[in-house]
Image (cartoon, rainbow, N blue to C red; front, side, top):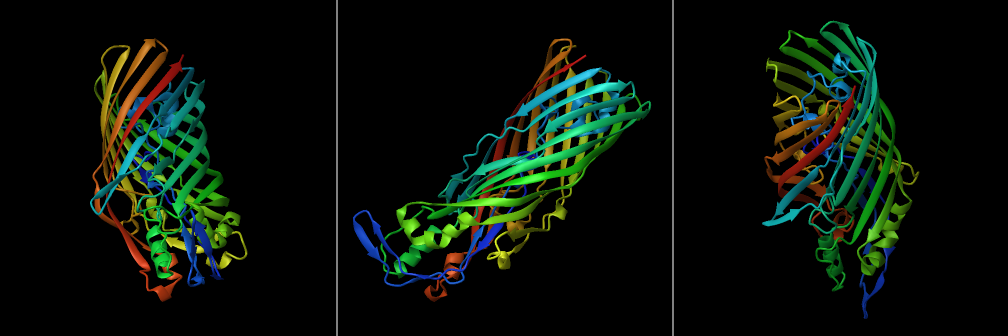
Length: 485
């Protein structure tokens, strides 16, 4: 969020690839239905640059909805002793596990919706449900030494604005998924004080669709050349970009200390990692035969293009405190700091010798962001717990680069949850999180209309700004099960 999660609601990162192509003069004759259209002029596409952005939701891509149990408690956990689930929240917490073996699994469904209002008309995304997950196994080596391994999805999100909406030249759809396997050890140094560390082994995939040519600009070009065919709201040509990131390594470390029987404090640090796509692939599609006849001579070269790029996954530092005023009630507060300021720019390098002069340096200038989480758990009976919480999640997105692929805004997120233990060693966990974006009005994204820029003799607007009012919301139901002995 989404952020997913963080999505956290939705938290977002951008991969962009810009393909710059030199084109020659073309005289095109096309036939549509039974009518022939002959261009009165050659279509001048000299030194035309076609920009293609491979993007992943920078605000929505950090996932903080990995535990059904803790999801009901605002996803707090840095100062809580959670057994196998502590491997994600704070490895040091695993050292206090009093079981020989703890197995846990959670799956979350992120159903997110974004809307953009443009000139009084509202456009809504049709996103697929994202399913971040977390599975883990922890076991005791000695009373004060524990080990385990977990697999989770720390980053991932999707957004689908449709093929022909007004912002298609900026983004149509994007899908990002990352995966981490983390072997972990935890040691209780002295009673009440523990440390833990895990090795994060991560990889991921990204899949983007984006419009290449603005239909309004192409319609103006066709009109200037004496052709009466019009694309209207139909995007003439789109590109699909896919990339697989190589394995990246990082670490997850933490410490936890019991001040007394009521108060516990903890700190957790997950290191920055860089996901590198060394050879992404592109494929162009056309709206119809007219678009193919007009544009394929220029754009088909994209089908042969490969690119490399890097996508940072920022460091995350979280401080936590928990308090038990009575035996049945646990309160927890986490403050999470995400180091987005390291995401200054995106470097794009083309693998073709013909395209290397067009390697790109794209400024992003994100800022660091905070998320604050407050959660409570109350044991109604020995077999039944209820939970509630609230999250305030701030956005790192720079307002000067506000793109519909990253509808970033501060979000308020209430949570509810429960656990039921049908038998002593088995727990079934359920939770629901609602993400309410505070909205962002009159958000602008400047861009260059490259088709217009390639034909200056027509006097078409080149520097444009896409402006919309954005809203986002999401429902995140979760279910989990754990078993220990």
